[in-house]
Length: 573
Image (cartoon, rainbow, N blue to C red):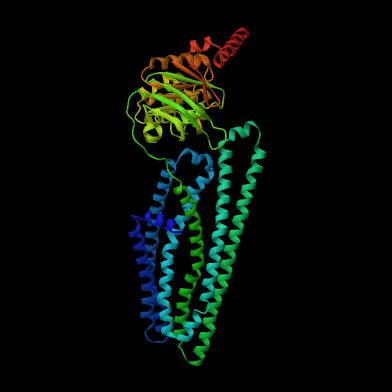
């Protein structure tokens, strides 16, 4: 376990260290009591004390020792659960604060694996092995002097194979660590494949890809099986060989002890006591292999968890004033890490209370601009300001608090409609939710549901139509009453009549907030105060609808094409 992992683990034991110490103390008391049992056995066999007094003492010592071992297990379990709960909370909190670029590269299934299976591995280690390490150490410290006090030659015979057992355990430890890492990573890939399949289950059904998906899942599943089997085989090899070594050690004690007994060097009671002490220490000593194996697993798990903690969180910055927002981009350039920038010297502005619209073919950079505005990514060239302040100098939470956004792919939680709406404002009342839903043109649809606003929508809102999902997402954004409203193709799945009613509702709120519209349907953006036509990450045209429609250029061509299509559809209907 590296220094950083030990430091992180030690930091998270705060508040539970007293329980760990209590578990170790209880364990020490239990061992101290059980340690006296062989003395009474020896005394009874050699006739130093009567049978019944010895039997009573043995029963009392065993019962008291068992009670302390119960306390040891209870306190160790409570302490480990407390530590692991804190670890889970901090890990989840850290994931919430990582930049979006981290999740672009990470696999969701692998992250779930680190937050569940790897954390469980750490819990198992802390619940059992930390205290057992102290137990094994204490047994060796207490038993060895007692063995040598009983008979020196027999004591040496009792520990003759200890170095071999210990060496075998350390070799085993190195092997287990490597095999467990491979198995754990294989399980992460299997979990990622499963998560991806379940997320896209409707696409799988729509394209009848069940057989292909089953075969695709079979590969990581088989890989996980094979690597886990190799780990299990290694464990089986260790336990069987260590059993042979330990039984050989006890057999050697019995043979050598019998020889010493025949010579008259020791009494029967001494032989029985030596066998009892040897049995007490050799099996915990043999457990060193298990302790080291679990330590190796815990090291791997902590390393994988530590990789998440080592990823830098989103940086914090200053606050931003309330009120209507002025948005301005100047010579803004940004790329996603390839040689083809998504934005190339982009410049535009939105004055407080204005509505501006962004148009352009897919890939023109419209959604990328919104991601930079929300500080989902940071740029390096040019500037993007809110009320004159560079967004990179503002706290991400502060920026997102003044922006209400409906992104290109609206996401709904597997909860009720009301729960999803309250994501925009967790204090929203039924009245305010109804008002926002009416403005978004979805109130009538929701009212027809059996449970109204308290109807569950399924994972990602699957029980709603595409248009309903968009309108619920729009209502959620309107509930925020944020000074900057961003609609990224938020009405692409609604019919023209519903779109017209939504535009009217938004027009009633015009001037109260700055609005940025992204759309491909020109009827959605024609009413904007200013339109920006984008191509290949640049603004190629700027003006009002009347200005752009009256002069040659991309906007006019698009307006004529869409107008001709609408006339043709109307003629055919």
